[in-house]
Length: 467
Ligand code: DGJ
Image 1 (cartoon, rainbow, N blue to C red):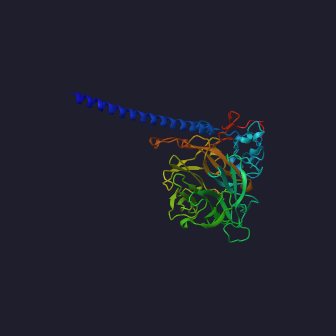
Image 2 (cartoon, helix red, strand yellow):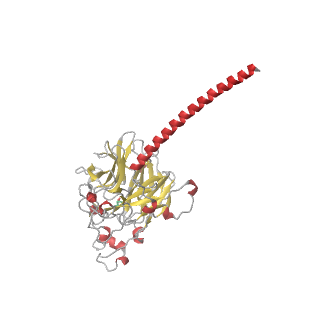
Image 3 (cartoon, rainbow, N blue to C red):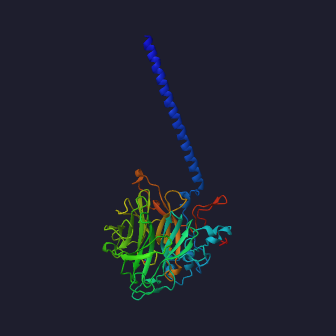
């Protein structure tokens, strides 16, 4: 019995030691876990403090109607046919589309009380940091992680607008691709022409008498090169090819490599889309006389197309594709085909970039019927995530082409929102317009806080306000 008791007390003593050890270890682990969580929390709150305020869907999605007021030299501005006025080069109403006063000048931001200088103002001349109109049409934007700059590339349109022999299409001679840099998507510094047209060799793809349109740049992490794709054509638009150029630096110079008809197919209006989730990139282009849109994966170095061609939007005659991805779903905004003249935009969506693509409707909201039916009198070129915006908010970039003087074409940047959609909502019959919508605003801005106030919502212009 005594032996049994001493055995029991020895056992419980051992257990006590083991339990104390476990308790001590757990306390140490709990302590270090709490410290880790604490420091992560501190880091997170520090990061959050640096973030710009979040712009809510409600603020972006304010439906704003367009009020046309005299003076346009018109007695009843609300009853005019806007399409006719847009096409009529001598109409007084053209100032509705191409205002000649009050350029948007980001350099004025410190000396204006009205903050007019801080707004995106669709259709107005938009000056760069040197005081010159930004000249980057049909363009696209890339964010460069190394310099933390945004780079905007586009067609540098200058000189006389004319019709080439045998062509109905208005044109300017090709000068090249311009590049602008910015930290905030608002103040843009001109970085120069990063790809020049060819002056003497008439058989060169980039000879100034040809066509170079819709340049887009993506970065290849493997080769560390910036790769530019664009539409290369002759003045009659019958060559229908895609050109590619490459550079070690986002500000060029870009070296022209060649043009290609992807897998033998025509390629006119185009974009490139890089899927940031897997690094794969795609050339997406209007093909078969613009009857359909094709999607061709690029090679690993992005300098060529692979052997795959997927066909989408067959028989729909769509142009100007702008592709983006949100919550695993791919979206494409396209225009119809009517040359430089505006027409109705459509949004298409797909669960894989190679398709199948489904058309979900006209995304334009607000302004008035004529504006909505003509993409607010513009044509899309690119969609990019809105910095500081709520999830699902993007910027839609478009050109308002001035056929009478292409070099005086304007830009429209407007908020585009995608409603959050979850698996179990996948087939909920939302009204189509509410899934992807581009909201008209006479002027608006991305969320930036200044002097304790946030000026990001559209604020219609008040008569008499400082321009
Ligand atoms: C519409 C295209 O989207 C533009 O890039 C340009 O090619 C014009 N057509 C030419 O008419």
